[in-house]
Amino acid sequence: MPQYLLGIDAGTSVIKAAIFDEHGNELSRGAHNVPIVNPTTYMAEEDMETVWVAATLAIRDAIEGSSVRAADIVAVSATGQGDGTWLVDSEGEPAGPAYLWTDGRAADIIDTWYADGTISKQFQISGLGPYAGTASALLRWRVENEPEILEGATNLWCKDWVEYKLTGDLSTDPSDASLAGIDVRTRDWSDEVLAAFGLTDAKSVLPEPKSPITNIGGITAEAAGVTGLVEGTPVFKGQMDITASSLGVGVARPGDCMAVIGTAGIVTVATDDLGDTIEPDDVGWVIPHSPTTWIRALGMNSCTPNVDWYLREFGGSFRREAEARGPQFTFFEYLDEVVSSVPVGSRGVMFHGYTAPGGERAPFVKPSARASFIGITGAHTRNDLLRAVYEGVAYGIRDCLDAIPTEVKVVRMAGGGANSPVWAQIFADVLGRQVVVPAGTEFGAKGAAIVAGVGVGMFESYEQGADSTVNILRTYKPKKKRTALYDEYFEIYKEYRQAMPSIWDKLQAITRRG
Image (cartoon, rainbow, N blue to C red; front, side, top):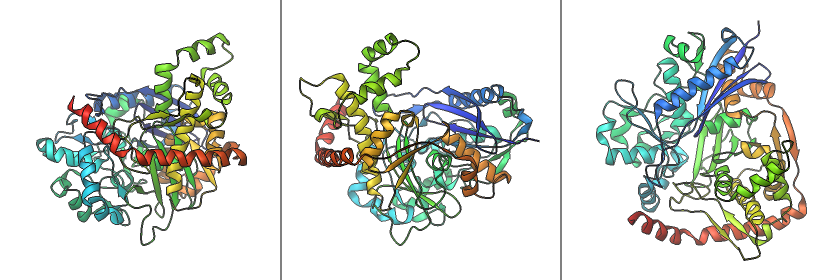
């Protein structure tokens, strides 16, 4: 009898579900959008019930869109957007909206923590360099501004919320918990770290961290009714999106590396040895991965949304031209042609992609960081600026990768940006490393499915699960002359962002007064 796995990826703006066979073939998927609510320019929230409804619809669409019988799905696991704070009250209902990882309301707390030494005090225990949307910062904000809402509540993360609705289990795992205050070596809550963050009194809201391969229960009758899954189907705890996506592209052994070119730009490198000190200091995250490995991760707050923003505001003419080419050309194929027509370096235009409301979090933390173009003259065109956005995101990924003190020769690329051959080659040239693109699209869901497969006994280990399910689709090698030129541009990129913090702070102060 065939056996199948269901992986759920509760992303920031889209909830996806996909069914995989034991070889990692994606047989079907469902996806539903979730609106992000911005009460102010620096706040980002989601309605938790809306997220759950989107998850049920995605799961049902994945099942109905395949020839797989729900009874042949032997295991389920979820992953989801990390950080933020997803509070459930004592009755098991949402205690208001979820505050997302892109939220900036805790910016002043972060600035204070970095200024007064709080981050350094706890970093070598937790491996956590928080930013405005980190769970630790948002929980501290709740302690200071909403103490009443914490009474009897449980703080979950996005995937935990979905799994709670599937099974009734209120728990998390060490990967999500690592961005709130654990001892990263023991993979459990640390009183010392929580005390440093001023969260001692909030420890009661923190759920038990369970191993990702723990069976947290079966699909309830109610969840079966709205998803189409069979009641009792086992659900395994799973991981946050950073680690699940890493596993889904094949990051399972020390030295393996991934770059996600999605809503966020995440760079991960696997290690089995944290050593005596964690580097770089006070920034990024160390996230438990397999039972014997951790992920050293640095992440840009905003990655593909930089392109989305540019096309939303200035892309009308590109769309009209693409449509005029006929239905045989997609819009993004046309954009690849446009970007290819502009020389390396975008004729001197450079873009820094700090468009998230919460500023930037890696390889530096600055809640007030804001995006900008530099180098523009009246001779530049919309095409130059478009390529500058593509290159600016690649510079940001290199900024993160170069900060991790581990030799990386091959970068496994995932996310929407990996679908563009032109952009993938830009990344190879900017990074100066070989870039490989695995087959498939739903790598977070695939990582979740691999975890479920290990939990249910289909695979013996993460390594075997990755080897059995991950195949390389395309390979891009860096072109030496381009890399040499990009090296020079990259030094300017870093020098500019290092000169801007005081200006960003002044801009933020003025805009928040208004």
